[in-house]
Image (cartoon, each protein chain N blue to C red):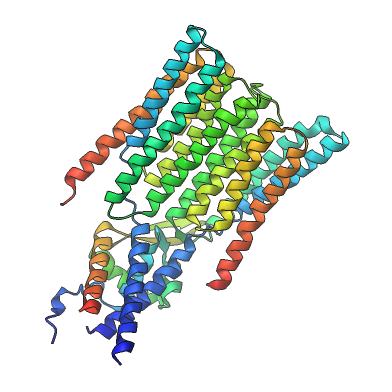
Length: 195
Length: 98
Length: 207
């Protein structure tokens, strides 16, 4: 083998590896689904709180959305698992982050609503804090600056709403959730076009 | 002239398709047959032959299962395969730097 | 012609760098030798014991707050210095290593927010810090176990979350001691196991 052949071989290997590695980025719709659903529910809850209409039913709203979300998520996972042709290390971590964040958020809700550890409005600060952690880790996995910015915004919002809890924290949450759903989607589209 | 010894090139990896298979598998955790085929543009028969050779030398491991009643074959690089591929890359590097 | 050859060789060398980086990123080496778990577990346990004694001897809440306000950032600075020295000795940085760093940095920020913003703002009483931090630690351990490919490390998250529920439903001064006990069992001991495991693996690796 001469130098020229070796160089050609290296070029081909590099291209194949980069192309295969792009499969690392999670193409699952779970994130998009959960963030959009939660954003919509938070916005409805906000409107209920501002107008006072149906506020007594907000517990039922969240219970209903959680049940629907979980069932649909399981159906989505089954549908997508048959299409996933490659498993990646990063993919496993993304799943773990999703589960860990979800459980933490449920436990924060439990802490407030069942254990009465703090006012329900503080749940927004708790959720924001843990989502900040999730996006910080994602920013390293996906190597995207926009994720780091989202993490900082989540954390800043968390601290802010600890000191200024209230109805408007729900509006912040709805906006941030929508951004957290659609910015990753837009980044993934950009990446697909580049590849 | 160089003192390059062609015996040092790993014959198992040193083939266009097998090199490509190893490049795919070292970049992911595990990949299905169809994923590998798409990435390297090989035919089913040709790909199967080369995967078999890599499996015989323990460079890759294979897992067969049924998903929704369809047979699915997944491949993963082994530690031996990883080491062999790394050595192969080092060899290519030494040729280029010569 | 020579310039063209040099350009092609430089391009190939750059491509080799990319290949090596991808290979390194995909490597699942054990990244954690457990010392962080032991370090933080020991420091926080010690601080909790001191805080508990301060409560027993009725030392002011302000002084108790200052204990944490100074000890935790100081511990983080010392850890940062030790880490910087260790990083200089490392031959290679792995993707898994970067992930572990980002995970525990993120968890650290969360715990800092809970410990300071939460209490200073009056959102909850000081006793509630322990169950809330336990929830964050549960999440962190779950993710850590997946990154390090150590299943029992992920399983520890269940104990942190379980402990959080107990602390939430049975708040009181003893929460501090229960949390200290949890740190010993679910942080320091796992750290020791990881340390022993990493030493064993280093001993079996070729020089």
